[in-house]
Image 1: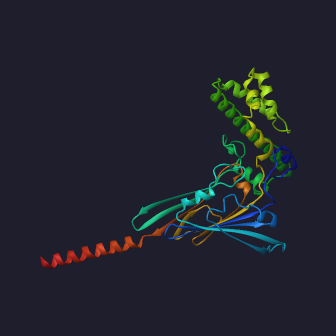
Image 2 (image 1 turned 90 degrees about the vertical axis):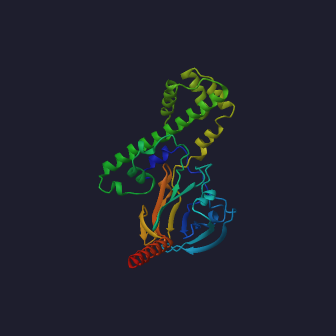
Image 3 (image 1 turned 30 degrees about the vertical axis):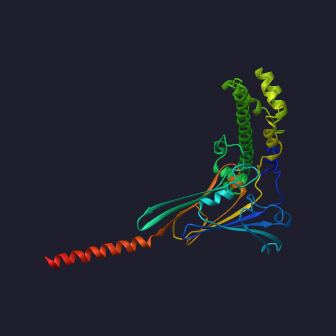
Length: 345
């Protein structure tokens, strides 16, 4: 993020694990469909010898540790290395797709499809880094475009290269406002969802459209101090003459929501990622930044998938040599038969 004001607008700071890490994902897809995976966490000793990975390394991962020297500043970096072979690409999801808490864990969903075309088989392999922000009710691009997201959260300054100082200041100010609007509105929609879920369980009439609009307005009224979940119920009793939202809070129904608001929302990028995918065929399409024959490479930070999913993909083609051999044998047999019949006649 580029301005101090934007830090003040953040509802919650990263209450996470240790210092900044670099994650290196190496994926080698083999001819038989199996996948060799190596994931390396790089950082200081405190982070590396704690729990640097989101996934459970006790599930068949081979663990090792090492050190390397940073070529730029000469610092000693510590490495935690996890390696495992999966029988298929999709089997990686059992380990890497946690699917329970995107705020605290990286959730990486692998998808793989192939299409048989006799001489060739076409493969589509993808890894989606699911957004860290826990509320998926709104599309962040309705508030910030891709360039602004890259500028605010990926340290990409290309969007301002041709701007004047005044234009940059305006971008900062307006971007902060739209970003805060996204956060507040997302939280409001989640709060409404939770209240309606509570109402269904208690047989209470759900919030209608007008009620929901007033809840949204209430959230919009909060300033830089953030959302006071404890007072929301009493304020709704005044504005909407509804007593049960306060009861829901008192009964602890909103505890997780309040905890998330107060402690857990990850709105800053900390870690860097390097991804390498090696495929066993002719690569013909990818969104990788670097392509070296059949090896593809990406480099990004966590800001890339804080507020929207990021899917990296490779499409490649393998040759079905058995199909070629069968075709040659079939054609050869047909030609021999044809000439024999012709000579016989």
